[in-house]
Image (cartoon, rainbow, N blue to C red; front, side, top):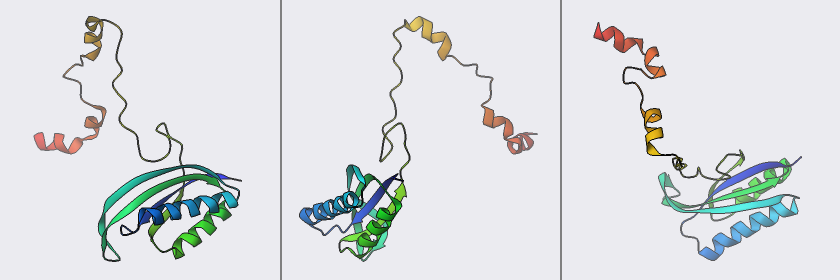
Length: 146
């Protein structure tokens, strides 16, 4: 049974663009040879690392999305572990979302009403004396006030 997966690759920043592309193409070939389906590739680019890895402070990130059997992912992980130029990688099951695969999308724009502004004004007003729901659970600050 095929599952939706994604792999986040962190490649060595010293690699040439040709070598980076070679790693991505090789990964795609392994997925397709294992009976999987390539969904997409999202290059995230060069990012600063939280801590040095192999005396490098940056990495080049690529997010790969695909559908494959678990055995194919195991083989792909084995190959990526021994590949030069791959500093780190992480394979995870992909979760479907409203923004699609990969990073979260931008915030949705506020809905534009076709109605007149006078009709929207009463709905936008909220009584100032109402507390948010989470405020009622805050008993400690109420004790300090007394």
